[in-house]
Length: 315
Image (cartoon, rainbow, N blue to C red; front, side):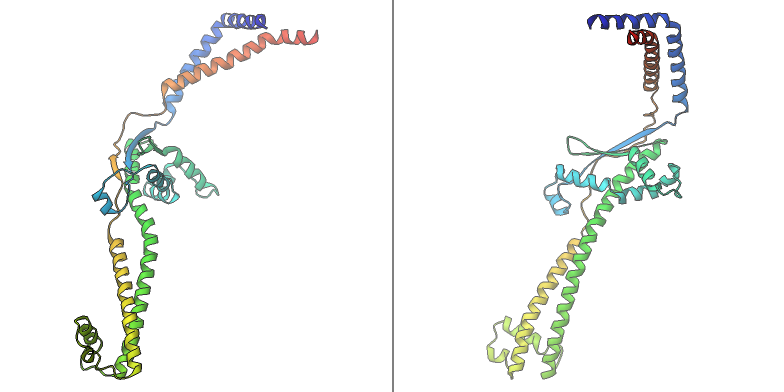
């Protein structure tokens, strides 16, 4: 077996020496082809920015205890960045359908667009839990603009996602509070139907005010002359206390809804980089030369050894 290996090695050297002119020609041709390929291939320019997710999107927490987010916060941010919604926003803003020459009459045009986009726009989480946003296009300014717009748009997109759920909850609290207000009004109308007020809030308001100030019961309850009125006053007190609580809950929810959501920490915004990242002449040259030499050597070696293999098979 060792002798066979030595023989194969010797054969390779013999082939290289015998076909040295051919191999030299292959190297020259491969080198020229790599130059041509580099020149005709579209140049790509890359740009990148770095952001950190905050540890909390509550502005009070950010002010009281400003910290960069941890792995879970970074993962949440990555999910937003990689979402179809954000990709569609960037696609529309920069007309990437036209940039990628996508034929929208094809059934798979959306898949092709998504594939091209994800090849050129990438998101990577660093070991420091920051998110590196990169874009690669044929225009340095375009690459920079895409990254910076993503940095800005992801804040708006996250806010919209939060607000969508918050709006539903806020509307529920508002509906509950208004329904309770109507219930209170109906009881008030029943009370006033039994005893006409001399002025606005003449009965209920003054009654509750006197009780809160510790006025003697006969004075505070002098207008409650029937069991029906007594029951209505008790119902009113209970429903009105619920109304106050629901109103307070709604006002708090409205306050938090109106507050702006904390934005991501921007460490670096993207700037145009005018040094191309592809195509690489050195990479093309190495791949072309070594690939051509490998294929040529393989072909010559098989051709050189094939007669011996056929004779061995016959014997």
